[in-house]
Image (tube, rainbow, N blue to C red; front, side, top):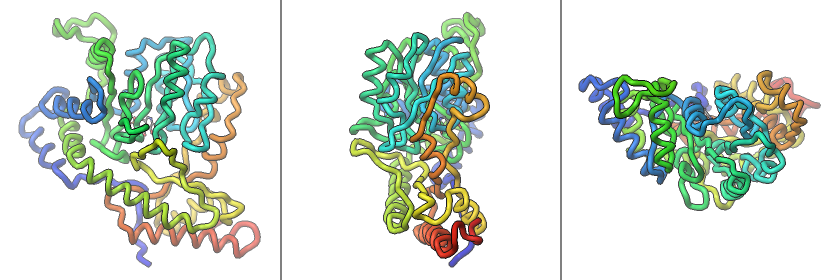
Length: 386
Ligand SMILES: Cc1ncc(COP(=O)(O)O)c(C=O)c1O
């Protein structure tokens, strides 16, 4: 078997990325205005089926801008899943508010709508469901709870650009949505993000806040305290080229998911990521669960073994409610999130990128199977994988 190193993620700039970036450089429009920026914002809004899209410098900033746009303030509470990347909760803290954590649904690994209502207090202002690992959250019941209780809803779609919920593309399913174009995402410009929105007043307010608070009618006059959250025309040149290839990228990744599913479903002790019947994944990062008793070793031992075999993987996100910045407040609220804890401690993310070959996938799954079998042959945990 080949032994070259397989990374967990890799960037694919094989289309017009270089040409458009060079074009932006030659035009000298490398800062935060220019034709590629306008083109990206209008194309991305159209793809997300929203009236506006605002390009910003990363997905964390996109969340921060969304919360500023919604006027979230110190003392407010925002309901978020605990099984997500830390940025979702960090952004809530940036505006002085408190993230309140709820459990996820075992059928989607996303925010469990049944847990949201019981987390609402007098201080709750909004809900941020996360479309985790490219799988959309169950938006209808979440939007319903939001509407009944007078709460806004923001989709954190950082990991799920172009995923679909009941046939509708994510981005316009609630009040606002935020996206990331970090290097490991489906579509990337290195570092980048976007906010999509239908409400024209909210879009206008966020545009002002993004650009240092400058009055759009009066240059260099600043009626509010704003931020520099802008993305460059140079980065948008790369994004435009990425979006041109969206169907090709989606297809390549869907194929990778299908191959992993087919191969891994034959490995004892491996459970695949569930996909709800109404979900169309944006295949961002393939994940599955390792059930130590049936598999033969733990997820972390498997990660160590794969690393020795030159295969890079990632553990699932550590639950946010247990992290030092959040655990004290979470424990005061008595948050107990068993589904989050179970998925977090057993799920592994496998290499997922456009150029990953089927031969590499065979090698990855064979190595996984080997780790499991070799563990089962010995008592307890294998010496090979320990
Ligand atoms: C769910 C989620 N939200 C927000 C972010 C933040 O995006 P960025 O890394 O572009 O700041 C990420 C990034 O990976 C994410 O996975």
